[in-house]
Amino acid sequence: MVARSFPRKVDKIMSVDELIQKLGLGIACGFSEILVESVASPGNACLGSMVFISARGELLRETVKSSQASIFVVSEDVELDNQSDYCYILTNDPLAWYIKAINFLLHKLEYNHISNLAIISDDVVIGKNVSIGPGTVVERSCVIGDDSKIGANVFIGSDTILSEGCFLQNNVSIGSIGLGYHTDIDGYRMLFPHLGRVILGKFVVIGASSVVVRGQLKDTNLGDFVRLGNLVNVGHNVSIGKNTIISSSACVAGGVAIGEGCNIGIGANINSKIILGDKVIIGMGSVVTKNIASNSSVFGNPARAIPTMNNF
Image (tube, rainbow, N blue to C red; front, side, top):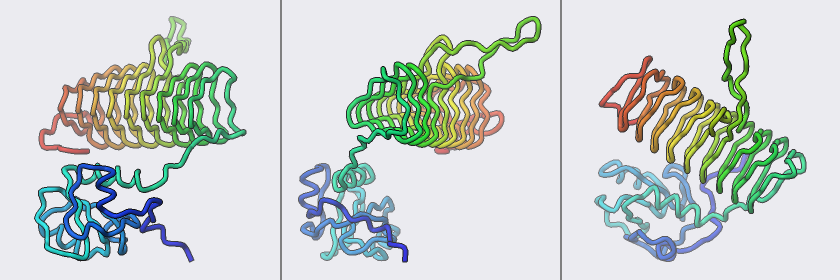
């Protein structure tokens, strides 16, 4: 028999009142002495579970009624039923509060194991609490920041810099050589040397089997909190602003500049040397062939503005 994975029991059992005292920014309504014993979704919760509900109105009431949870984290402006056997936690950003609560209630794993099957150059600088998986290769003069986690079979090319808290999943390639070449008068294709680095900002996440190519005569830069899905390709000399998300199977060609807070959908393709402003949304499977101004939403092949598109 396969053990049920949820509800997930917490490592620190405490009352709702105690939890709110620890985290702040929440108000208890109802039976606040109840203990938080597990976290779950409304559909797989049990007594003692704390869940998050984004719904409002009648849908909120139906979800609460159908769930076996005891604690419900909801928006502070919802209308509540008068119940004494469970508790609401009211906050202005329920999902953010719920994530903070999970991180507080569950012991953080200390990723400080470096596999003896990893190949690491002697001059690599490795910070505190770093994990490096088996089969990973880290070439010369790299810097790996504190609290970074590197999966199995990862390649990190020479001179790469990972700031603190980076997470590279399995089979990622960072700092590899790209496709830049020049065809001479005899028709011979000359590979352009890639002399630049890859620099990852703080808390960057790179999905499995993704590739980030080193720069040629400048660096490839990913800003703080950038997140790449699985199978994403980022070409040479690319810069990506902080808090940008690029979904799985997207391809960013060389020389592209992407602003802050952008969302790039699954399978999108961005042609070389394109400039995207801040908070640009690129729809799933789109092909971007022209520069996109800030706060624009585009979709299609070629990608064009769609004012009514709010997400990807």
